[in-house]
Each structure stands twice: as C-alpha cells, then as structure tokens.
Amino acid sequence: MISRRSFLKVGGLTVSSFGIANGMFNHAAAAQEAKLENMVAGVKPLTPEDYEARLEQARKLMAKMKMDALFVSGGSDLGYFTNVSWFLSERTFGGIINRKGKTIWVWPAFEAESAREMIPKDQELRTWEEHENPFQLIGGVMKDLGAASGRLGIAPVTRSFVGFGLKKEVPGLELVNGAVISEGCRGIKSPKELSYMDLANKITKLAYKEGFKQLKEGMTPRDLSGAISAAHQQMGVRGSGGPQFGPSTAFPHGSRVPRTLHEGDVVMVDGGCSVEGFQSDVTRTVVFGKPTDNQKTVWDIVKKAQTAALKAARPGVACEDIDRAARKVVEDAGYGPGYKYFSHRLGHGIGMDGHEYPYLVKGNKLNLQPGMTFSDEPGIYIYGEFGIRHEDCFVVTDDGARYLGGMEATAIDKPFGEE
Image (cartoon, rainbow, N blue to C red; front, side):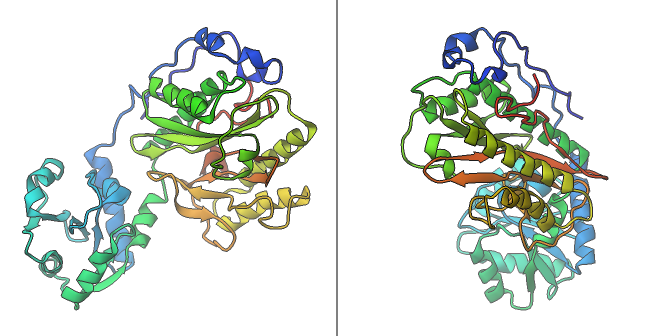
C-alpha cells in the first residue's frame, strides 16, 4: 500500500481569501508558505504478482468469451498487462496473451535486444527480419497454441494494418474485438490501483491550490500553468493544469484567444498527473476578485449537479442515469434543454489513460460495478461571458461512490473545501 501522504504545511494566506484583495495573491505571499513535499517517495510499485493477477483475469475473460488469445501492441494496454513500454510503430510487434501459458512475443529482429531488456526471461520471443512476414509469425504462434483457426482478440489501440495483414496472410484465423478483455480487466480497479489514483488526485488538487495563491492582475494562463506544473514537480510528479481566463472559460476545452487576468475574471483550470501510471483529472473554477451574483448562482448550480451525480452513483445503476441525474439539475435551473449549456457528457472512465472506458453518457446502459472509476464534471458554458465546471474523479464503492483525493469544492471561494 501507499505510504499515505505527506500534508502541505500551511502558513500565511489560504485559498479561502479569494475576493478580499487581489494584491494578496502574489509571489511574495507564496514564498512565505512552507515548501511542498515529495508525496510519492514511499509509493510501492506494482509487483510481478500484480501483473500475473491481471493476466489471470484476462485468461478468465478469454475463456468466458471463447477467445484463444489476445494480441496487444503498444499503448497503455501493453503496459497494463505486461509492464512493457514501447512506442506504436509501423513494424508489427506485440505480446500474444493466451489461455495456455505465458505471453509469447513477436518483435522485429533488429530490436530483439531491446525487447529482451523488458520481457521476462521465461517468456518466448519470436523475431522477424525486415524482409519477412510478421503476420505469418503470429499465425505460427496460434498454430503452436493449438488454435490455428481459433479466435484471436485484437486490443483496441492496435494499428489497423495489423488486422488487415492478419486477414490477408492468416485467413483461417478469426479476428475479434479484444476490447471486451482489455476493458473488462481495466474497468475495475484494484485497491492498489485506487491508492495510486487517490494520491494522484490529491497531488493535483494541492498543486492547483498552490497555483491559485499566485494569481495576480495581468498574469497569463501560461504563468499559472507554470506555477501548477512546478508545484506538481515539487511533490515528485510531472503534472499540468490548463488554465483559461474570463470569456475563454465558456469554451469547454479552451479558446485560442490570448487573454490576461483581470479583476472579476472567472479562472478555470483542468489538468492532472499520474502516480505509477494511474491518472488524475481535476477541474477547479474560481473568480479572481469579487464574484458577481450570476457567477455565484451558476457556480452553485454546477456544484449541485456534480453532487447529484455522486449521490446517484452506486452498483447496478446504469451509466446514463448518472449523466441524467446531473443534467436534470442543470435543466431545472433553466440552463437547458439537453446540451444547450451543459454541452458534453457528464464524465469518462479514468485509469492509466485520462479518458478510457466506460463513459457516463446518455445511451450507455452499462451498469456500474464496485471499483469502476470516473470523472464527474458537469458544466455550464455561456459564450461571450464565462463557463463554470467542477471536476473530481470518483470510485464506485459497494454501497455508493466517493471522490478520489478528497478536497471537494464547497463554495466559489472554497475550491478545496474547508481549510
């Protein structure tokens, strides 16, 4: 388990001072704060036993789906199942996870030594020279597994030429969508994985808190982003926050119009970091200076929508119903119908990828299960004026759901809860 976290030593000003005096948010005040501490120094990484447990779950799902093997090539699926990291290439490579034994690897011969640095010594590596056909090599592996005409799942991020090549060169093989295996495993997080995500979300919220102390008249989004990135780094991770100021906050993913910070501007920051490969995703929206009544009202509506979604989340509830719970609050407050002001789905799955299966959106009737993790991020976007979004990630528990990393916003001047 993770060594639970170091806490920020707080002195001087707090974020709850918003709206009192803009001059209080400057570098001099921030310098009076105690430095952030490395929060990942005691984190224990995944073990070979953890990876074997993932492979065993994959084998169980393959048996259930009558699939003989799963071909995994590049991306986070490869890292998840094998702890091997390799870029997506125009050359065919990957691991064939199978029901009969250890993963068998297919790799370009000239990269064999690099492969052997990453692949466990007891796993077989089959290589192909530049003029040779890698698809027939994969077919040979399937034949040796007794599945020459069996069912081979292709992991979702595998490049399309691999599928086309296998269809042409190994026509007796039945290719099927491997997402049911990779997503079926990755969608449910283990306690260790959840501890990584708890910590990642906590770190990002502390980094935002540190960045908000440095808000000042005339600063650029890049200035704030740099402060947030530096705070992440002090806590031992690489992380970021993408800020938008003023009318740019009405664009859910930001505007290209350059802006600097002025009194009364809404400030929205969306970003995250990773701990042992598991991501955080957090959005906080505040006002620099004194918020208007309208800004307060919209902020409160969005917060009520976020809370309604969390309360609705529990095992057995459909993903679309969580979206509906939040959207109803927004619509009942006059910011509807549908996507008119709340212009995107409520949330996305999160884990090793910032956005991954499954999604909280109308039409997704998949039922929640304990261990699933999502973003909860309703918003109201009024073009020409401002946008408000709150985002925290949550995990489905046995009897409900809870936010990861704590520090839930409670008011427009308390973006991280009570101090």
